[in-house]
Amino acid sequence: MSARPGEDELIARYFAPLAASSGALQLTDDAAFFSPPAGCDLVVTKDALVAGVHFYPDDAPALIARKALRVNLSDLAAKGATPFGYLLAIALPADWSAEWLAAFASGLAMDQAEFGITLLGGDTVKTPGPLMLSITAIGTVPQGRMVRRAGALPGDLVAVSGTIGDAALGCKLLGKTTGHIELADDLAAQLKDRYWLPRPRLALAPLLQDHASAAMDVSDGLAGDLAKLCRVSGVEAQVRVEDVPLSLAARAVLDADDTCLETILGGGDDYEIVFTAAPERMAIITAQAPVPVSVIGHISAGQGGVVFRRDGQPLRLLRGSYAHF
Ligand code: ADP
Ligand code: MG
Image 1 (spheres, rainbow, N blue to C red):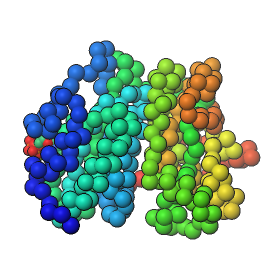
Image 2 (cartoon, rainbow, N blue to C red):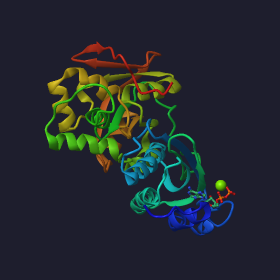
Image 3 (cartoon, rainbow, N blue to C red):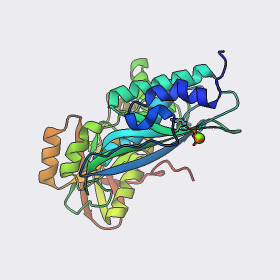
């Protein structure tokens, strides 16, 4: 194990190279500054991750870093925003190593290049507890154009990007939640990959900004998250389970064990976007979307949350979504 640097040297060695924007002053000042593009609102979001809760202490550090960044970028995508930069707070446990931090920083570098963002600042502290990190991401939208959760109207269609349930099944395969799944190795690998490395749907952001009536990122399970969107919009959603897009791997799991539907609809970590739009607007989105988009139902008047129907029969889910408390 190589020698551990002190706090200032740590920041200079691992984080300053990631702080490319001139206003970050190579992390040698108390704070950073930047000028948002003219006529834009800043969109800000934060997620905190704790070892043993959101990832395991022995997960690959570069993947922990990338996941921490990507869950925030997913929130920005759902708001129709273009990511600009982020701040990082990290609390290191007593046994941190230089190797761990170097790999963690390399993960951040990889995703900064992929998503065109830069580190603006942060804080580095020690903790008597498990490793904790928190990222605040900053994006931009034209003034007044952030896509809200509130805004879904009766008659709107409901759609999701990508496929639903893969990450929650992957998490199960990794033995991180109870339950057993039998699956061919290549399919299992696809599901685990979805758990480890979210794919924020930033490519969808401009279309959402122009056409969606409401949107949110699916992080805690489609059922519970769509219910939240409905609650703040004051409407109800009618979803056909048959139309919820599943990967081949998730389909194979479901065919073998129907009780996994609960995990697929209520498990977390999808980092897809669920959104609503008037039918003519939805047609534009589905025609132009650079990522797969599937219409799964429609919005109706009412306060019943989300009504899932399978073969026309209402489906009762035991557990709608992941909740910490
Ligand atoms: P202060 O004591 O005023 O909080 P620090 O010495 O902690 O200042 O930080 C110095 C600079 O390094 C600041 O610009 C801060 O934003 C940056 N910084 C500290 N830790 C991190 C980190 N984990 N990631 C990114 N920037 C950091
Ligand atoms: Mg500090």
